[in-house]
Image 1 (cartoon, rainbow, N blue to C red):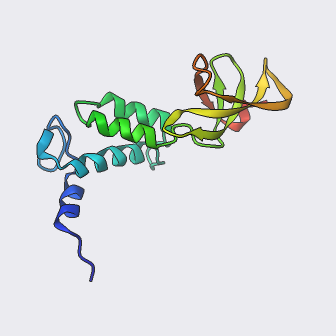
Image 2 (cartoon, one colour):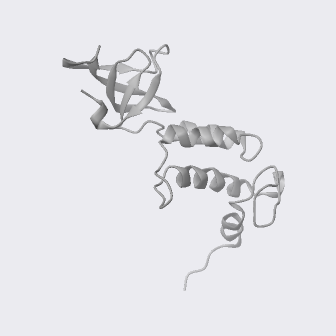
Image 3 (cartoon, rainbow, N blue to C red):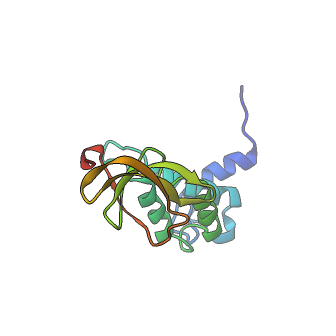
Length: 156
């Protein structure tokens, strides 16, 4: 038989509690929630919204992060959200994207600690597929933003 420590069980029990007391099962708030319970809450919400459900499609990781930001300081601990943001790839490798300048490409690599500024292989410019794709590092090109995530059918 397996046993779970009291700390682990308590944190699992608290992972639906929120800083402002709006959570469940007990409606506790702030420092009444164990730090590990707060970490599990952030990870659980992100996992829930970025996973397919029978009643809705999964959100993209950047949309899941926006859900967390919306609850920052009210429902979720700011420092935990920031640590989570640095640790997770918001735009995963293989994702097709469109930049704010209209170029389209695919995420090819991550910049450590900056999950929202990946490396992009540009595949299309001015509505035309390019012959020699090239890399753009969003970490070094702060004027470039990912405007939207694309289905493969939306690329040339």
